[in-house]
Length: 373
Image 1 (cartoon, helix red, strand yellow):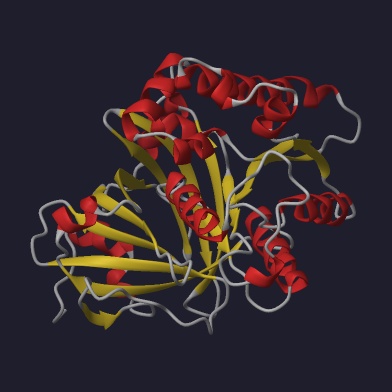
Image 2: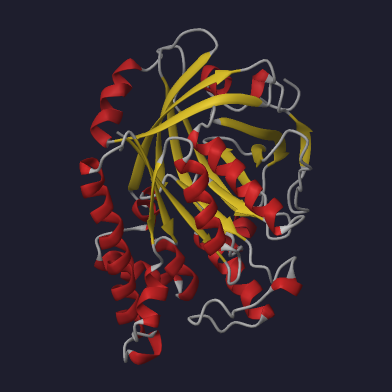
């Protein structure tokens, strides 16, 4: 059985209810058994259990997270017993990191710790996250809360909550922002396309642009509320020509997740077939036995930043031992999309099509190439 667990999240009046219907209908027709995990917060609030009813604010958050975890885990346990379960798509109407938008960093970490979780483990529960931007940001004339009695935000509050919700998921390797561009139908078609690409319907293409930049101001990055720091160690395995196979350890503060990725390059340099699979720590350690002896492990610190205006997801990689340069990667919905680079980053040159700056070449050199190479 192939099972994928994704999160559909967003700000108030973002179109999640309609989007869930589209997802169910579209992917059911394409061979997926679609299971929707309904939003726990709305269920609790409409049943009479509001956050204001609790003397301890964290008590409601623990109830909420516990409810979410139980619902998601129950589906994972019983889905294998269902008929027609070769391909199962579990769509979570919000995930446990959504709670982060309503709490301080310390409060959220306390709730996670109560369930023996940390941020790395929380993000790793989900294979991908799709955020629908509130209608209040870009489609204000359609903003209404009439269809959700658990909501009470005005336009400004909705936009601020939307941005806090986006920031709550920064650090996830497969976070996509669906903005209000064109009609609402265009927005949902964009969502369907992003989910299809992730699932590999028909193939899991990834399009990205890559830039060599000057070493950024790390203190400035970490002071930003929409930035998350991630430690990455990736090791390349012996593989066939034109194919890269790597294993990656990813996380922070001693808590890590592990993945195996296979990349097959196409004739278009910025477009490739990428197949990624989460693996256990034991599987990771076994695969390290097949490390390519000619390539160095690549150790880097990644700063993940959500661009509020453009909705683009930036990843800034600073390599171990490097003090002059860094690499900026921007994942795009299509090869013609415009890249929005913030003013606090200085681009030296684009290196999307330059094989010298591929991680596999960096592994060969044992360092990041300098600008003149």
